[in-house]
Amino acid sequence: MTNRKSKKILLNLLLILIAVVTLAPFLWMISASFMHDGHASTYPPSFLPDKFTLTQYTKLFTKLDIATNIVNSFILSISVTGISLFLNSMAAYAFTKFRFKGKEKLFTILLSSMIIPSQVTMLPLFLMLKEMGVINTYFAIIIPGLANIFGIFLIRQYAQAIPDSLFEAAKIDGASDFQIYSKIFLPIIKPILVTLALFTFMGTWNDFLWPLITLTDQSMYTLPVAMSNMMSEHSKDPELMMAGSVLTILPIIIVFLIMQKQYIKGLMMGSVKE
Amino acid sequence: MKINIKKYYSGFGSKKSLLIFLSPALLAIFSFFFIPVIAAFIISFTDFSIYALADWNYIQFIGFDNYFRLFDDPLFWTSLKNTFYFVIVAGPLSIIASLTAAILLSSKTTLFKSFFRLSFFLPVVTTLVAVAIVWRFIYHPNFGLLNYALGYLGISPIDWLGDPNWAMPAIILMAVWKSFGYNMIIFIAGLHNIPEQLYEAAEVEGANSWHKFRNITLPLLAPTTMFVGIITLIGFFQLFAEPYIMTQGGPLNSTLSIVQYMYQEGFRWWNIGYSAAIAFVLFTIIFVGTIIQLKLKKND
Image (cartoon, rainbow over all chains, first blue to last red; front, side):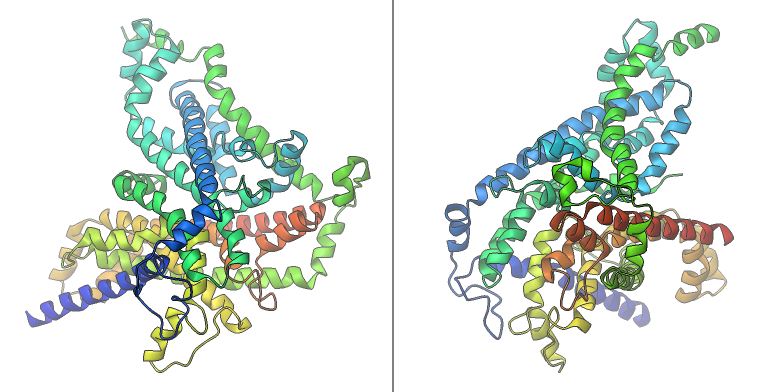
């Protein structure tokens, strides 16, 4: 009995230890963002601000114009999410409910190409967008994000469980394909659309390499690119950088905390394939 | 009646609506994914450089020259070595950490499950660039939290990101911290699918925890482990933002990754043909790595 009990205590202590390690960087980030200049570079390190201040945040908004970058990040993440959800769900509808020659083959080709790392496409894509004259515009981010294979796969995975009879009934009643798509298909797949929206929003928000390549003006930067750029000038200002990190992470954390159930469910679904 | 439905059913997706539903997404994927992949392959056999950027007439096919050049390029070998170092150490560490966390969280004696699950998962969703900046300060040799904490254990300060021997371990530690929560969730799902009766039967036979783990959990978790192994491998070979933010590939190129080398050659020096060849080497490595893991699974 005591053995059981000590095991239980040990187990929970271990969990607490891991939680401290995972959370400490966040707690320090938040705390340091409210410190005065220089207060986070002392020894021994200060864990809490001696005098709570918002100067770092004010500096970010007044001197460094971080509001522009926040707006860029929001515009891009929302538009990529909206457009790709629309195109992916249409394609997924065709892949689940239409019969056409070579369907399975086409889908297999799409699926197996997911192994190709996106870095391979970046040079030609950059040249292409340069020819189109959209480098350093929102289109440079939106165009490659119009549709994606993972999104189609995830929706199809979910939609395959819908019984055909639902669609057949509507068909017999004379509904058009588009009516079936919008009135029956979309409402049924809503849970997976929410999950996919989360994935896409967070993915676009957090993306770094592609925006770093295609956005060349500070006024066009998304938050990660702006932060990376800021780091080169303010590597000696941990308090300011922590405030910027808080602003970068905050929207993601809020969205995640509200929708973590859908997120986790989708993550598990995406992993249970084949 | 059945025949009737069949007739209607085959009416599903007339050629016109097939075109309307399928072509936008497919067109986007073909134009902005497949065509660039093919183009990159072709470019990797050319001397596409900054001159050709202004006038494409300068482009010449040079056969396998870029690939031969890579073979003789010490910096490329360094980036290859660093990336393998990262993948081979961080990959297993991350998987072990996620499996441990998943098992702990699946135990019946665990309190506050959802709190722990949430805290372990938090690093996964947060912006890599932002947390890399946070970690850069945590690794600070004088003021950093890590050296301060290690001080209590009697370990003298380490210049984590400034010492060529420590920079990669520092990046590995941060990457494991950032990623283990993701695989943890997948492992939890896998553990959930193992029937409880198996453990109960084993207990009746007198099996201890280790026996149960070794003979029930691990074998039944094998498909999950393979999936986790493959996605971790694919993700980790694309290492970029962590070293870019924390070390810029330094010190002494000790953290220069394949993707960062590709980025530098392609987008800083505009050696586009050469950079495309690097990208294809990366693809080949990921492809071969995935095939090997799939083969290993089949032989089991």
